[in-house]
Image (cartoon, rainbow, N blue to C red; front, side, top):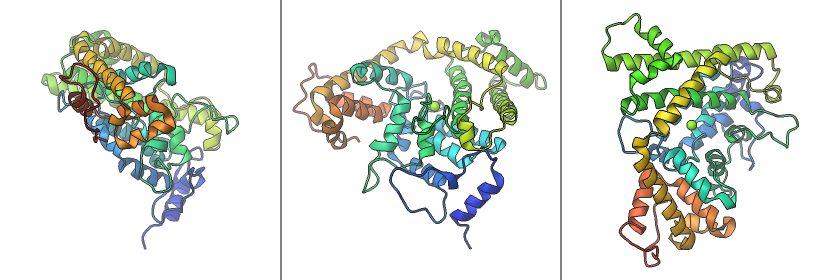
Length: 389
Ligand code: MG
């Protein structure tokens, strides 16, 4: 006999902590659907996300280094997979619902535009008079509106709990009195995101030689991890040694979050997932590690994200996005059919912003080449419609 959804729900009841969000107690979906025979609601959500177009596009979107600039660097997709692994590790250790955490993690960056945070800031400025642009709000928009998979509604019709996890920073849910935080599973994803980017941005920064190991000697967290990792192995060759320090750092941060959060949860003793939502954040670094991680992040901001060596390529990305934005605003018929039809409903600015946010890094280059490259004016009315999306 195959295991049914009811069996899986019973398993959750037996194994999850009382403050975990069980799938049987989900608040459900906006559009009612029959339950699946073999999968819980959160397992279904995870699968819907993985099978979506927006998920596949993450492979060609920037994390820090432009997509295509090196095959070893993280992309938005590999970042997402790392976040999912870490969020599941937190959830498993703390008795939370791994399937829910995984679904939120896999969807958390679906709304990221091309060119990472630079793309986000550019669209935010271009949309200043129309409500701005934020990738987390856009992730929700992707799963609620922009994915077109079902005959009767737009979006993926995900559960309330997965959508709740995508609202970041958390906007207290006015419909439900007293909620000040999302589920602990969503909090686990938020911390997993931070742990993942601290470690992998540092890794990619070192790999690219934009950051040098000797600069890190001023950072207490790096020094401590290096000592812990390399004292038993004083003669490791440099690259293997560097990877081992980074691995030790990741392990240390994950361990710190699990140990400290477990203590907080025990002290506060939430009786249910909703009880946890009524209390301040419980999944956190210890105060000491939070301080050291902040120091490391400040360093990354200065030396990696705003490194002058990247400024030419950054400027080109801003220019391309801005020029395409202006082009589509004045020539909306050049948008792909899906987004052109949205102009009536959302206005030309939002439809254009949605379209550009969906593009991958390389699609921006292709679009720019096709419509603007080599053409001095923006009069492109003679050009055919774009069919990229
Ligand atoms: Mg992220």
